[in-house]
Length: 466
Ligand SMILES: C[S@@+](CC[C@H](N)C(=O)[O-])C[C@H]1O[C@@H](n2cnc3c(N)ncnc32)[C@H](O)[C@@H]1O
Image 1: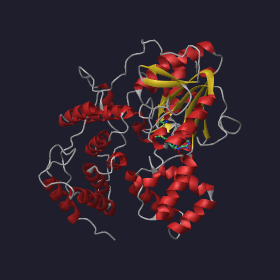
Image 2: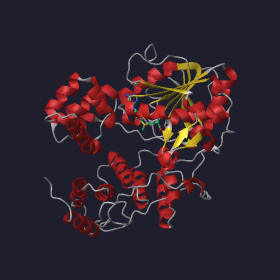
Image 3: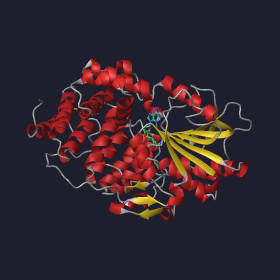
Image 4: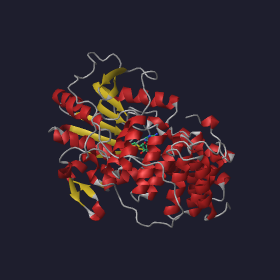
């Protein structure tokens, strides 16, 4: 992401964003500027500051305030056993080999968000009979996410991908459908604040060298190239001689940025220290990428003005992951979108959702996958989550008209008409650039004039800009 080209509506936003980038590495694309400004405005209000300039000055003096803003602006999306192919590799190859070779293994979930990834490591170690010999660490820059991680109690949404069999044996039921980790797993993970930009890594007060497995997934996508290079260099230095670094499927390749030994596995690249003797692909007995079959989203339906819907279910139906597998599993983003649309058209929204979630672990940069996810979530009545998914689409592609509409519809349904109106106005502006008879991208062939009429109908019932 190139912050220098980001267009902010006021230079103070840019200066504030710069402080966040310098503090955390999280950078802002042009497409995310408007959303970031909204979060900054909220932070200004929460801090009781009188204007952006005052807030900017306060941020420069107060590291806690800056840390709160970093938290507000960073994405904490995660769930248990995210990316089943990677977990197959960890459970069948990486961890058994480490456990066979060492008395104690050191496992680190770097940028662990609310802890699902770190606990997935603990559960995997337990399944292999090695939990007692595993020192497991989860770190993040977001204090409130770390606190949630320590609690170890999760909503069904944290289990939205394909999950291992018998996972329920690791949880007790809790209020509101929550699942609380059994103490044996919860107590096996230590959670600690750590900024990956800390120049002391590895070292005292940060994290020590000798880590056998580092998961640093779905965080590099938010960093600029030079930040990725310096953080990845530190992570490689943290590895034990036969340790592994695994990044997310959508994260950039590290081989051009740092000195490391790439290992091609069936789930993609993993990394080891440079010149590791015998570093090679694990045997191909690792099952090929397990494809969850799932749901898709109809992209055609246009929103009609509706009142706020207070019912917002917590999670998708658990049946999602058990749907039948297709004869040939879709693997490219386009194939996944097509299959997801098909499933949604057949009313199989849970299956479509699982397909999209799984697809996003490999194609996080696909705006269409994020957008379809938003549509399915809206169909499931999860309007707040639908707004978030639409924003993820816009984060990738600011010009995606249908995602602006999906975001606006979500805001409308959760009773935020001013925000809804802003989204519809964005869509309206973008529609002006398309010929009336042309189809609006991702609308399943709806013409510009038709979509414009629908947008105008929505706007007519919404507040004018202040
Ligand atoms: C999308 S989550 C990834 C969670 C998990 N690793 C996964 O893949 O499911 C990204 C996390 O990175 C954290 N993060 C962002 N910048 C960071 C930094 N400089 N140091 C440590 N964590 C950071 C955020 O707070 C957020 O919780």
